[in-house]
Amino acid sequence: MTGVQTCALPISELKLNKILEVFSFEKKGRFKDVQIKGKSYAMVNLSGSIKKMISLDISGDISFSDISIESKKPIVKISRINGKINLSKNKAEITNFTMYFKDTKYSIDGMLTDYAKPHVELKVLSDNFFCAASLDKQNNTILINKIKGNYFNNEFNLTGEVSNLSSP
Image (cartoon, rainbow, N blue to C red):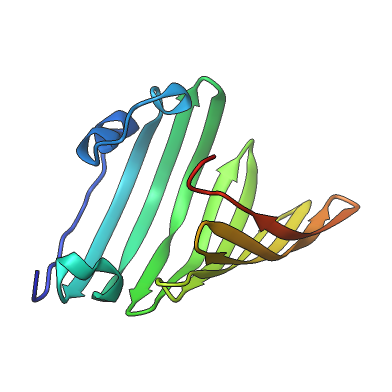
């Protein structure tokens, strides 16, 4: 594909089952009853060969407005998801992203750089929780450079790696 592709994607009521069918994922366990509701808007410009996805020139943004995700088994409800993802050639940035989980508001900011060798920086904040993470992916391994924060008065600090991602 060469040129510019632009699309607007309103989501009024969309079941995850349908998304999984489109992308040929097998519907299993927890994802069978997940429902996504709300509005989103995407404007994405792509340039390059679709055969070389990693080298596509990408720019644009995706906005979310009052999205909710619900599942009955296990009971999960994330509501009032609002925010924006900015896309560029070698970076995806989450800005002003907020959501509610169990009646608690969480703010999320983050950045994914280098699509070929992904590096993620992420911060999550609520009244009683803070977490800052730095992760890299190399082959089938996630390198945990840092996951550090606090939950109420308890501090945590993790480093390490998760290997064999292709065979969970």
